[in-house]
Image: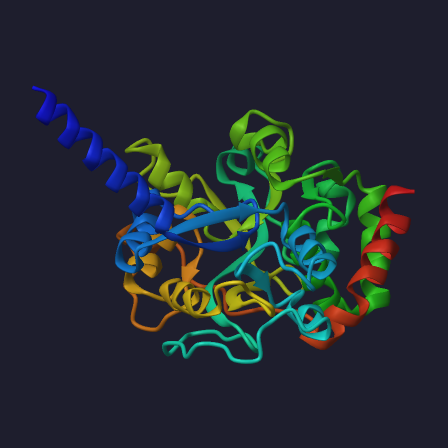
Length: 335
């Protein structure tokens, strides 16, 4: 009996030593990161490491945190910087000069491996429009007419990456002056602004009991409704509007950070985010498209086609002018 207890004690000690000996690799992500635990555990198993995921707020909040800590970064790699802010990340030299090789992709980012992409646009509640016998708007200009007063809810671009993407689409489609003129009309037309996407979609949108039948969301949101409806819907209860100035293609990527404590493991982690395990999980865990070519989409994605009309500024302009654009939006819409 004593020998048995001794053996158990030795085994526990050995397991403890192995656990303590595991190297840690850290991944900074935004709050919307939602890969399944088993997918992350697979990387840990394959590389005998402990993976620590550090959530740092929205995409721009994460960028600002990485800039402030760039001399001694809070992580070894980052996921979730995107085409709206990656040029600024490059300006501050956040990325290691040597990045791992990637797989062939449908979209790309400079100095980072593309992981996923999605489309920000306006969703509408089909049943509400049928019930009220109201035709859909055919343009941003028509949306600002009295016929659509008090019908749209938008997350603020000052606090939401979804709201920011929509604003960037506006600027790409209407130009700067045209955008401010349109938003001034929308303010008079009763547009509702929320702090974040969740409040806009789950509180204010009529599909979820709110009073607004149009909401700025993702082109993939309608298929998420079918997926989570578990048989309630045979077709999506919502759809999206794809007119000029209303669609932004949002590309997210991963990169090894400059001064990473574990650069070799960070490179493996970045490459893992382009692996089949991760790419196959992305469509129904984060409801965006996998960046790697040839990855099959789940059947539910057949309900929605990828938008073809996309308008947005250059990455250089987004890096240089984004802050001033948001300040101008706040001035026009909220003051």
